[in-house]
Length: 294
Image (cartoon, rainbow, N blue to C red):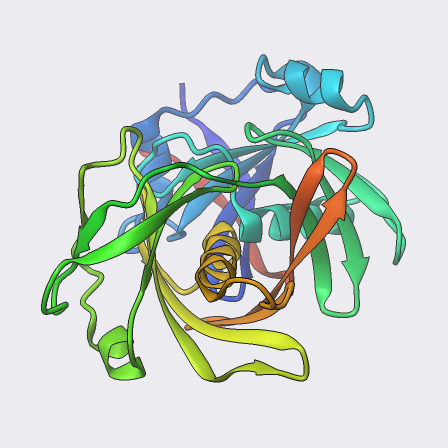
Protein backbone atom coordinates (compact mmCIF):
# COMPACT_ATOMS: atom_id res chain seq x y z
CA UNK A 1 0.00 0.00 0.00
CA UNK A 2 1.42 3.37 -1.06
CA UNK A 3 1.54 6.01 1.68
CA UNK A 4 1.16 9.68 0.76
CA UNK A 5 1.69 12.27 3.51
CA UNK A 6 0.68 15.91 3.62
CA UNK A 7 3.40 17.34 5.82
CA UNK A 8 4.69 20.59 7.26
CA UNK A 9 8.34 21.39 7.98
CA UNK A 10 9.15 23.38 11.11
CA UNK A 11 11.99 24.22 13.47
CA UNK A 12 12.83 25.62 16.88
CA UNK A 13 16.22 27.43 16.86
CA UNK A 14 17.32 25.25 13.96
CA UNK A 15 16.22 21.93 15.47
CA UNK A 16 13.97 20.84 12.59
CA UNK A 17 11.07 18.44 12.24
CA UNK A 18 8.65 16.98 9.74
CA UNK A 19 5.09 17.08 11.11
CA UNK A 20 1.90 15.47 9.86
CA UNK A 21 -1.63 14.99 11.15
CA UNK A 22 -3.10 11.55 11.81
CA UNK A 23 -5.91 12.13 14.35
CA UNK A 24 -7.10 8.51 14.48
CA UNK A 25 -3.66 6.91 14.44
CA UNK A 26 -4.28 5.07 11.17
CA UNK A 27 -0.88 5.78 9.56
CA UNK A 28 1.78 3.55 11.09
CA UNK A 29 5.18 4.29 9.62
CA UNK A 30 8.08 1.87 10.00
CA UNK A 31 11.44 3.01 11.42
CA UNK A 32 12.89 2.61 7.92
CA UNK A 33 10.23 4.88 6.43
CA UNK A 34 10.79 7.50 9.15
CA UNK A 35 14.55 7.42 8.58
CA UNK A 36 13.96 7.90 4.84
CA UNK A 37 11.69 10.91 5.41
CA UNK A 38 14.28 12.49 7.72
CA UNK A 39 17.19 11.78 5.38
CA UNK A 40 18.59 15.08 4.10
CA UNK A 41 19.58 13.62 0.73
CA UNK A 42 16.72 11.30 -0.21
CA UNK A 43 13.80 12.53 1.90
CA UNK A 44 12.58 15.85 3.26
CA UNK A 45 15.36 16.11 5.84
CA UNK A 46 14.87 16.64 9.57
CA UNK A 47 16.20 15.92 13.06
CA UNK A 48 12.98 14.07 13.80
CA UNK A 49 9.41 13.30 12.80
CA UNK A 50 6.30 14.27 14.77
CA UNK A 51 2.86 12.76 14.26
CA UNK A 52 -0.13 14.74 15.54
CA UNK A 53 -2.43 12.05 16.90
CA UNK A 54 -5.26 12.23 19.41
CA UNK A 55 -4.26 10.73 22.75
CA UNK A 56 -7.30 8.46 22.74
CA UNK A 57 -6.11 6.88 19.48
CA UNK A 58 -2.75 5.72 20.83
CA UNK A 59 -1.94 3.25 23.58
CA UNK A 60 0.77 5.59 24.89
CA UNK A 61 -1.82 8.37 25.08
CA UNK A 62 -3.86 6.61 27.75
CA UNK A 63 -1.33 7.59 30.42
CA UNK A 64 -1.48 11.22 29.27
CA UNK A 65 -5.28 11.31 29.50
CA UNK A 66 -5.13 9.69 32.94
CA UNK A 67 -2.70 12.40 34.05
CA UNK A 68 -4.74 15.23 32.52
CA UNK A 69 -7.97 14.73 30.51
CA UNK A 70 -7.21 18.00 28.70
CA UNK A 71 -4.29 16.33 26.86
CA UNK A 72 -6.34 15.81 23.70
CA UNK A 73 -3.30 15.75 21.40
CA UNK A 74 -0.27 13.49 21.75
CA UNK A 75 3.18 14.29 20.34
CA UNK A 76 4.27 11.03 18.73
CA UNK A 77 7.99 11.74 18.26
CA UNK A 78 10.66 9.75 16.41
CA UNK A 79 14.38 10.45 15.99
CA UNK A 80 15.95 10.87 12.55
CA UNK A 81 17.18 7.28 12.53
CA UNK A 82 13.64 5.96 13.06
CA UNK A 83 14.06 5.21 16.76
CA UNK A 84 11.31 6.17 19.20
CA UNK A 85 12.01 8.99 21.67
CA UNK A 86 10.32 10.07 24.88
CA UNK A 87 9.94 13.72 23.90
CA UNK A 88 11.78 16.78 22.59
CA UNK A 89 11.82 20.25 24.14
CA UNK A 90 12.12 22.15 20.87
CA UNK A 91 9.74 19.68 19.28
CA UNK A 92 7.01 20.40 21.85
CA UNK A 93 7.11 24.09 20.97
CA UNK A 94 7.04 23.44 17.22
CA UNK A 95 4.29 20.85 17.67
CA UNK A 96 2.20 23.33 19.68
CA UNK A 97 2.66 25.97 16.98
CA UNK A 98 1.65 23.40 14.37
CA UNK A 99 -1.55 22.47 16.23
CA UNK A 100 -2.56 26.12 16.50
CA UNK A 101 -1.65 26.99 12.91
CA UNK A 102 -3.54 23.99 11.52
CA UNK A 103 -6.63 24.82 13.61
CA UNK A 104 -6.40 21.58 15.57
CA UNK A 105 -6.27 23.43 18.90
CA UNK A 106 -6.69 26.95 20.28
CA UNK A 107 -4.55 28.80 22.81
CA UNK A 108 -4.59 32.55 23.35
CA UNK A 109 -1.57 34.42 24.71
CA UNK A 110 -1.18 33.54 28.39
CA UNK A 111 -3.35 30.43 28.12
CA UNK A 112 -2.08 26.87 28.47
CA UNK A 113 -2.10 24.12 25.86
CA UNK A 114 -1.80 20.61 27.31
CA UNK A 115 0.24 18.13 25.26
CA UNK A 116 0.68 14.40 25.85
CA UNK A 117 4.14 12.88 25.44
CA UNK A 118 5.89 9.66 26.40
CA UNK A 119 7.63 11.67 29.14
CA UNK A 120 4.33 12.79 30.65
CA UNK A 121 1.98 15.69 30.04
CA UNK A 122 3.58 19.03 29.13
CA UNK A 123 1.90 22.41 29.67
CA UNK A 124 2.73 24.96 26.96
CA UNK A 125 2.09 28.71 27.16
CA UNK A 126 2.38 31.31 24.42
CA UNK A 127 4.63 34.23 25.31
CA UNK A 128 6.59 37.06 23.68
CA UNK A 129 9.48 34.76 22.70
CA UNK A 130 7.21 32.11 21.22
CA UNK A 131 6.30 29.30 23.58
CA UNK A 132 7.23 28.27 27.11
CA UNK A 133 7.04 24.62 28.08
CA UNK A 134 6.84 23.34 31.65
CA UNK A 135 9.19 20.37 31.30
CA UNK A 136 8.18 19.01 34.70
CA UNK A 137 10.43 17.58 37.36
CA UNK A 138 14.03 16.65 36.67
CA UNK A 139 16.57 14.50 38.44
CA UNK A 140 20.23 13.64 38.59
CA UNK A 141 20.40 10.08 37.32
CA UNK A 142 23.37 9.18 39.52
CA UNK A 143 25.81 8.64 36.67
CA UNK A 144 29.11 10.45 36.04
CA UNK A 145 30.49 8.79 32.90
CA UNK A 146 33.71 9.73 31.17
CA UNK A 147 33.06 11.13 27.70
CA UNK A 148 35.39 10.86 24.73
CA UNK A 149 34.76 12.99 21.66
CA UNK A 150 36.67 13.57 18.44
CA UNK A 151 39.14 16.47 18.77
CA UNK A 152 38.81 16.51 22.56
CA UNK A 153 42.30 15.89 23.94
CA UNK A 154 41.32 13.68 26.89
CA UNK A 155 38.15 12.09 28.23
CA UNK A 156 36.10 14.45 30.37
CA UNK A 157 33.68 13.68 33.21
CA UNK A 158 29.99 14.24 32.58
CA UNK A 159 26.96 14.70 34.81
CA UNK A 160 23.97 12.47 34.11
CA UNK A 161 20.64 14.32 34.15
CA UNK A 162 17.17 13.08 33.22
CA UNK A 163 14.58 15.60 32.06
CA UNK A 164 12.20 13.03 30.60
CA UNK A 165 15.00 11.70 28.41
CA UNK A 166 18.64 10.95 29.35
CA UNK A 167 21.53 13.43 29.08
CA UNK A 168 25.24 13.56 29.85
CA UNK A 169 26.57 17.10 30.27
CA UNK A 170 30.28 17.88 29.84
CA UNK A 171 31.82 21.20 30.92
CA UNK A 172 34.62 22.56 28.73
CA UNK A 173 37.12 25.21 29.76
CA UNK A 174 36.99 27.57 26.81
CA UNK A 175 35.23 28.36 23.54
CA UNK A 176 38.04 27.00 21.35
CA UNK A 177 37.43 23.52 22.77
CA UNK A 178 33.72 23.80 22.04
CA UNK A 179 34.23 25.02 18.49
CA UNK A 180 36.91 22.42 17.76
CA UNK A 181 34.74 19.40 18.52
CA UNK A 182 33.82 17.12 15.62
CA UNK A 183 30.35 15.94 16.58
CA UNK A 184 29.86 14.21 13.26
CA UNK A 185 31.16 11.27 15.29
CA UNK A 186 29.12 9.99 18.21
CA UNK A 187 30.75 10.69 21.60
CA UNK A 188 31.65 7.59 23.59
CA UNK A 189 30.41 7.23 27.17
CA UNK A 190 32.24 5.05 29.70
CA UNK A 191 30.30 3.34 31.09
CA UNK A 192 27.72 3.40 28.28
CA UNK A 193 24.23 4.73 29.02
CA UNK A 194 21.77 1.79 29.09
CA UNK A 195 19.36 3.48 26.66
CA UNK A 196 21.83 5.88 25.09
CA UNK A 197 21.95 9.58 25.92
CA UNK A 198 22.11 13.03 24.42
CA UNK A 199 25.56 14.49 25.09
CA UNK A 200 25.91 18.23 25.71
CA UNK A 201 29.20 20.13 25.70
CA UNK A 202 28.98 23.43 27.58
CA UNK A 203 31.13 26.52 28.09
CA UNK A 204 30.17 29.25 30.60
CA UNK A 205 30.05 32.77 29.22
CA UNK A 206 32.19 35.59 30.65
CA UNK A 207 30.72 36.72 32.94
CA UNK A 208 28.74 33.64 33.92
CA UNK A 209 25.98 35.80 35.41
CA UNK A 210 24.68 39.05 33.94
CA UNK A 211 21.78 40.94 35.53
CA UNK A 212 20.91 37.86 37.57
CA UNK A 213 20.72 35.55 34.54
CA UNK A 214 23.19 32.73 33.89
CA UNK A 215 24.76 32.51 30.42
CA UNK A 216 26.20 29.45 28.69
CA UNK A 217 27.04 28.17 25.20
CA UNK A 218 26.28 24.61 24.13
CA UNK A 219 26.69 22.08 21.35
CA UNK A 220 24.95 18.71 21.38
CA UNK A 221 25.05 15.26 19.85
CA UNK A 222 21.52 13.89 20.04
CA UNK A 223 20.84 10.21 20.49
CA UNK A 224 19.45 8.90 17.19
CA UNK A 225 19.96 12.16 15.29
CA UNK A 226 23.62 13.21 15.51
CA UNK A 227 24.69 16.82 16.00
CA UNK A 228 21.76 19.23 15.82
CA UNK A 229 21.65 23.03 15.78
CA UNK A 230 19.68 22.98 19.00
CA UNK A 231 18.23 20.59 21.58
CA UNK A 232 15.59 21.84 23.99
CA UNK A 233 15.94 19.14 26.62
CA UNK A 234 19.71 19.42 26.17
CA UNK A 235 19.63 23.14 26.91
CA UNK A 236 17.62 22.40 30.06
CA UNK A 237 20.06 19.69 31.14
CA UNK A 238 23.05 21.94 30.43
CA UNK A 239 21.66 24.81 32.52
CA UNK A 240 20.80 22.43 35.37
CA UNK A 241 24.31 20.94 35.29
CA UNK A 242 26.07 24.32 35.36
CA UNK A 243 23.83 25.48 38.21
CA UNK A 244 24.60 22.24 40.07
CA UNK A 245 28.34 22.74 39.65
CA UNK A 246 28.15 26.45 40.52
CA UNK A 247 26.54 25.66 43.88
CA UNK A 248 24.64 27.90 46.28
CA UNK A 249 23.81 31.32 44.93
CA UNK A 250 23.63 30.21 41.29
CA UNK A 251 20.63 31.74 39.46
CA UNK A 252 17.45 29.98 38.44
CA UNK A 253 17.21 31.82 35.11
CA UNK A 254 19.54 30.94 32.23
CA UNK A 255 20.21 31.95 28.64
CA UNK A 256 21.52 29.11 26.53
CA UNK A 257 23.13 29.94 23.18
CA UNK A 258 23.17 27.10 20.67
CA UNK A 259 24.32 27.13 17.02
CA UNK A 260 20.71 27.73 15.93
CA UNK A 261 19.89 30.60 18.28
CA UNK A 262 18.98 31.16 21.92
CA UNK A 263 16.54 29.56 24.36
CA UNK A 264 15.65 30.37 27.95
CA UNK A 265 15.61 28.00 30.91
CA UNK A 266 13.97 28.69 34.27
CA UNK A 267 13.85 26.58 37.43
CA UNK A 268 10.91 27.14 39.81
CA UNK A 269 9.35 25.43 42.86
CA UNK A 270 6.04 23.56 42.81
CA UNK A 271 4.15 21.49 45.37
CA UNK A 272 5.60 18.28 43.92
CA UNK A 273 9.18 19.57 43.72
CA UNK A 274 11.26 21.76 41.44
CA UNK A 275 10.18 22.08 37.83
CA UNK A 276 12.11 23.51 34.91
CA UNK A 277 10.75 25.37 31.89
CA UNK A 278 12.07 25.99 28.39
CA UNK A 279 11.16 29.00 26.27
CA UNK A 280 11.99 29.95 22.72
CA UNK A 281 10.68 30.47 19.20
CA UNK A 282 8.91 28.03 16.90
CA UNK A 283 8.50 28.45 13.14
CA UNK A 284 6.83 26.58 10.30
CA UNK A 285 8.77 26.97 7.08
CA UNK A 286 6.99 25.09 4.29
CA UNK A 287 4.47 22.36 3.51
CA UNK A 288 4.27 19.67 0.87
CA UNK A 289 3.04 16.25 -0.15
CA UNK A 290 5.31 13.24 -0.04
CA UNK A 291 4.78 9.77 -1.49
CA UNK A 292 6.93 7.14 0.22
CA UNK A 293 8.78 4.90 -2.23
CA UNK A 294 8.35 1.80 -0.05
